[in-house]
Length: 317
Image (cartoon, rainbow, N blue to C red):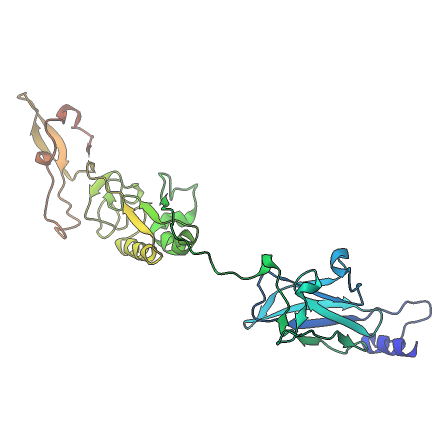
């Protein structure tokens, strides 16, 4: 009784009054784990406080997840111990097959604490006898014949008000997502047309205005396209290639929209002429990359019904 009262006094600073049960000492443990302990493992502390043989099944054995401090793995426990001495061992699974052993694989004697410690109990586990199969760290499987999987990296409403904010900068988003896409098995991406469209920063890309402007020149009210700038596009392609992801670029070569000026065009088989939006001078690009200018002569006249290409209609398909 004298020993128990001394423990209570040491822990609480006072003695229990008559009729009061003395508080149960709480012992804190920190167990340093072997490096090969899986990060998702469950560590058990089993001993005479919980029933040596049935502590796992009954749920009385205390457990801890694997924690890290400066790269070193450890487990933490707090046990209410009503009787000493305390004898215990650590296991990495709910059976003695997974108990701690010495570095050479030989058995470890029961750890023992004769009386309530004043501070933290620190233990070092040298090695596990075995590790449960579900927790064993394994190397990623070697893929011999990888299935090719292409992902469409855009959709029509992307970047609009009711859709994710991050999608307003698709090229930057692809840089961030490249590792994740590779990890889940994506081997190729289908990118939207990256050229400047008639609707400027709102154009999905199929309203082709200038095939040579990938978000580099101030045309149609913006320098960037709906998806970003040319430099951001180049960064996205580099990041995807770095992760082994192929890039397929969608180029709408048979569209031409947002003409810069009109010209007089004679209707086929008639004396009538119209003022048609068929002049594409690309003044914002100022002949960089290409000096070619588009006009009515670059259109398949045999298939074009010019009577539907005047007034406000500035689109070529």
